[in-house]
Image (tube, rainbow, N blue to C red; front, side, top):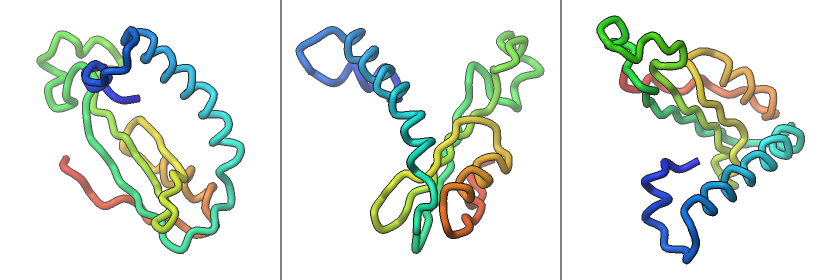
Length: 121
C-alpha cells in the first residue's frame, strides 16, 4: 500500500480513513486470489527489482538506537518480479534480503528467475 502521505494528496471527496480502509480491504482480498491464480506464467522475460527501506531504524544504526529493542525494526526490502511484455506482477515480497523471493518467483513462472542485481547496501 502507498505510504499514508501519498494517500493524503488524493482528493476523492471522502475521509482519508475510508480510502485507507478500502485499500486495506482490497489488498486482503487480492492476496489469496493472486497466490492461487498467478502460477505457471509463460514469461519470455522476467524483470526483477528490489527497493530498500527501513522500519524504525537502519540496520547499521541498531546498536546505538532506542527503537532497536523492537525485533521488527531493521532494514526492509520490497521485491517484485514482473513479466516484461504484459507487465503482470508475478511475485512480490516485503522482508529481509534473502533467497525466499527468488524461490517464490521461480514457483510462479515457467521460466527460471535470475536473482535481482545488487542494490544500494
